[in-house]
Amino acid sequence: MKSKKWGTLLLAGVLAVTGVFSLSGEQKVEAAGSITTAVRKVSVSGRTYSVQTVNIPKGTKAALGLAQGQVGQTQSFASIVKNTNATAAINGAFFNSYGGPADPYGTLISKGQIIHTGYYGSSIGFKKDGTVLMDSLRANVGGTVSSKPDKNGKSRTLGWYATFVNRTPDAGQNVVLMYNQARGSHVGFSGGVAVTVRKGKVVKKATNTNTTIPSDGYVLVFHGSEQQNADRFDVGYTVDMQFTYTDAYGKSIPWDDVVTAVGAGPRLLTNSQISLDAKGEGFNDPKILTSSGARSGIAIMPDGSVMLATVNGATMNQWAQIMKKLGAKQAMNLDGGASSAMYANGKTLTNAGRPLSNTLIFGQWVAMQ
Image 1 (cartoon, rainbow, N blue to C red):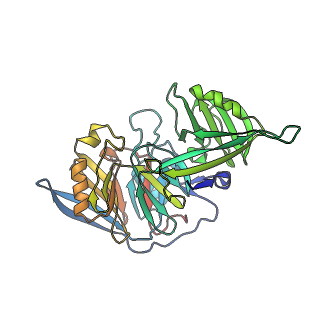
Image 2 (image 1 turned 180 degrees about the vertical axis):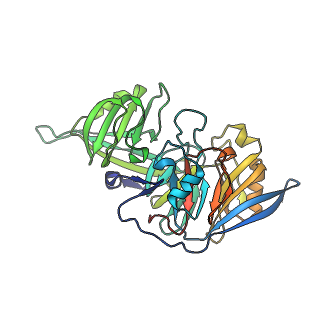
Image 3 (image 1 turned 90 degrees about the vertical axis):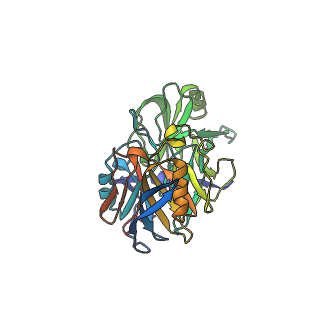
């Protein structure tokens, strides 16, 4: 598998700027072409649907818009759009909208950094050169920790992994969690053992009391029975972090150069053919499996452009058929229901029925990736 050292990436930090992450040297970048909108009529299962669509030309910059600039918060769709200065936007990954932390469920990548991990569904990813990918992405985070050299100059090196990135654990859950500044200034909860890493070195190890996340590093929290693995770390130890990208079957996939990604699903089309398998992707909610409702989706078109789309009152099977009739080559579902939202060229085309956690944004003045 391909892997990439996180040292430089994470130590540089991720600065939240009005809902979209920005590193020093941010530049304004002109879109490759005009973003256009249309309402298209599509007949499926004896019914005609009015589908709101937005066409994003190939090469248009894409970025992640987060509520209040952080993972685990919510904000109105209109505020996220305004703060990010997007030309077009659509709601993104599923998230916890029914009480408790508003953590996403899917994998999120911003500025080439994993800022949330999910282990089901499908993801869409955007490379810096404008290439768009769609796959059953699984982002795996781990690394090694090395003790201080002993009197003979030898040190012990052991492996470690993170179960989740920037997520609040459930009570009693046995997990290892990694937090970077996409989470905000603190991890957001108390409990477990927190290991603070700065510039590749452990600088603090203590019981987690809503630990501060350093701007030049990250925090690992060992929760539940995983607390015993915190014994591998001590102040002064050297920590290396790596990440690998695989599909749902464990096969390495070429996502190392992806700078923006959102995980949701299920997949609707693969190479212009319906490939819907919601249960196989880990979905069990009737709202996905059988019910009809408001849907949001994203597609890669045969010419490499991207189509955003929303529709009301469709089952997932009907949604897949609609995407096929719209001419999509690859397509996947995004969060829907009250989360369904879309904007383009100064106008809200689909209104969200609740505050959102995350969005995909596109346009003329998206921050340089």
